[in-house]
Image 1 (cartoon, rainbow, N blue to C red):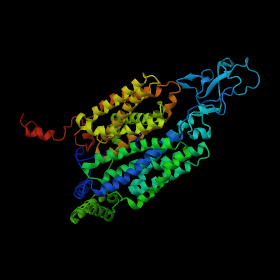
Image 2: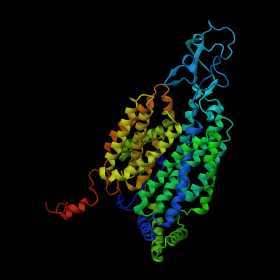
Image 3: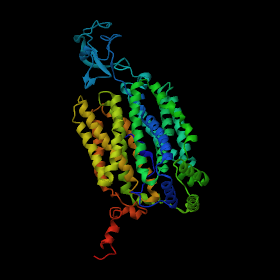
Image 4: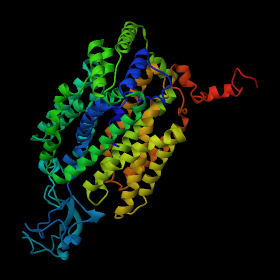
Length: 572
């Protein structure tokens, strides 16, 4: 998926994968969440509301696929074309070069020895009047469709098409800048505040972008849009998993991510119905301004309120949740939570986070992790962008690209614990590499074959991306886990900056993007076998525990061995 998850630095834990707590506050709060209902009516109402910004974030993140796309065109041929002629005509065989499709930027030059002076349309539309020499047609084109993008409005064609790809790169640079800033402001001013303000401001930037009078203005507001709006995914994600009980967090994280994939699919549908880029942006962005209402509708994160010492507000949220879920919440349990929280805050300054020591300690693991994240962001976004170039309807292709991510997000829940993180990650990446490599052997006009391999490859990389997200949260120790996850994901963002340029490779060799994706998936896929296995193991607390993960026993294994007399303290 073109998921934004690479920018989210939070880990997801539940009772099954997390064998310890990050502190007494977590234990007390989790116990309260279990008592008042882990996913009751209160959580469901707010969870549904949080799915809305996930849909909008999908719109914001990748709307440039349609607003800044190339439009199918060919050169206008003055000797043959008239006001009523269409994109495909019988005389194109001797007037326009053909290679997989009609050349968009060149036409066969008129044979000057046969024609002298002006050539009115239709008078010299015969094969003998054209030579084999080609010439550029400038900005004189015939278009296949009625679609309007910034390409048609700002005259961006042929040798200037790199400007269209640059929009996607600038979009991801905006995300690169915005995600860490958004994380800081969310920690400083609150999850709910950041979600509401960033969502509405990003929507406003999108509406202003729809009024752009030139390319630089469009590009500037594309950057500002994503610099502000890129925080929607991680903030909504955090609110969702902090809202529910420990046994529901993995499911909550998976379901809310599915809404991002549905947003991509819905974007393809809306783009097919609104084929003018200005109106499409207004349809996508204008309703999102209403996200400012979240300031009054959504509750603030209880965990954030406790971290800020806002105890009464946190207690009020918990009491309201218990009331809506029709559960009882003993006051002594609330008081115990608040007392534990005060103690934790008083000791907070004593904690040290040896990030530099961790970087030296896990240098090879971090380098491998960064390469893996780079590979996933490059391929996941690259496939989404290249889906519109497969042939057939680009809108249908893009919708299928969104829908195929849903089983890809659900599959890890089935295979991660059964097969293990490492082998699941490796196998899904290799499957993607095989599909991309095989697609290079499929004829360009074999739409069904190309689409099938593309969709399987997209499903595989979505599956592996979801596994990678959980896996990265488990291979580093507690006190540097979020920091190193953020480091890997931020390096991975470089891949998403380069992904919008991959369609340009097809101009030099039609299968170049697929070969590039297959190469990275193959190399990085095998390198994932160097990671330690973490399935059903207690999350490491210290650097030594993280280093020795391969030696660590599965949870419950040591107890069973001791019961059998085979443990380290038992008789042999």
